[in-house]
Length: 94
Image 1 (cartoon, rainbow, N blue to C red):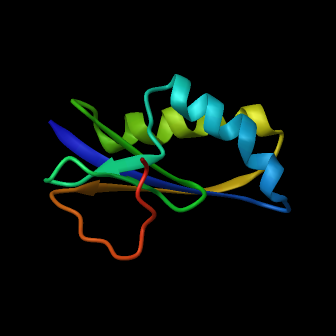
Image 2: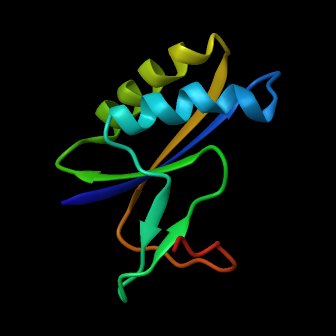
């Protein structure tokens, strides 16, 4: 199974503009958190999403673009396929 991180930056937006995007991304199977090898959940920064599955990058981009349409904003989107992640100072989700 492949893992992807997606970064979406809505142009000319305020923080509240991300709420419909978060909901649409969640409906498409994306998560706003990552899970460590120890099973601890960490919140991703605003505009970042995680998904794992048997997808290719083009499919992940298409799903992300569809979610952006719920915001009525233009967006910059970056899809990264990952073989592993390392992070610092992400907030723990309890």
